[in-house]
Image (cartoon, rainbow, N blue to C red; front, top):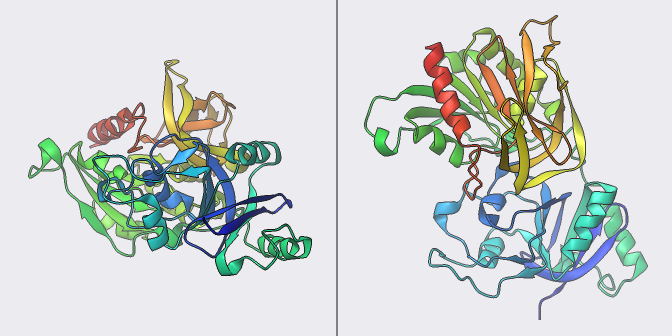
Length: 389
């Protein structure tokens, strides 16, 4: 029998379950992810820093874990919620069980809860703060429904930080610059381009996707100055995905404006998309429950093509769907158009500058577990750098 555990939401909703992974207390913004696969990539994605993830797929851990599929060196979520953890790993690629990894990472989780009910609740009420409590962090009587004990837990949740206004890139970025050389057929050859990638919570697959296309990628920490970026002599600059509120990322916005002023080709993903929008003078806003999962339909507006894409974002850009003049500094950066929209709710999922070599998307074309419909965007970035060379 597993120990008792509680999931307490900030609006007072309580779910009773069993401890899974680490024991103790964890707090964060509770969100739901609709992926049926790729849980290891999800849990090692720095974009999930300080979030409690509800996995809507009923069985988690079936294929175990392995070193090859990690997107970073650690697990980043604040906590994990699942309905039924796998009893054993069933994959020839498995090097261990998911729960053993969760325990080693001291990542607190809860299982044997109705994840469908939790997801419906979040869709109706919106994402919010929450806490998972088990082991010594669970007060006497709380598991039995004692109102006073649960009230204490609710106070702890209510005192935890909000995601709005959170500046988190500095907590997940690399401590120092490192380089990924061209791979595959380009290994040992002269790079086709040199990309400086600003790590705001980068996943390993992003530099891999560029290196497989012949690029040398220098991954630099958040806080790298424009002068330091230019000193590396980039053919292009890439801003990665990452956690937190884009409205708090003033430092990154100023860096990108300097890059746009230099007319260096730019490609941004997820957080990098929001930073481009802000640099151009547009606003951002928080979505009610966000997009998270690997089955999100996005339409490329120019061709009408629909791509199934991987998402992880709780904020979105407020950009007119029709072409407009970028409002920053009286149109300093020229015309902008929305290239992609989400078909579930018409959220802006990609933009490009018509007078500068810059574009970005809100989804994840580098998604390791798939789908891979958007991978051609890395080819587009390589082509853009060649054109501007």
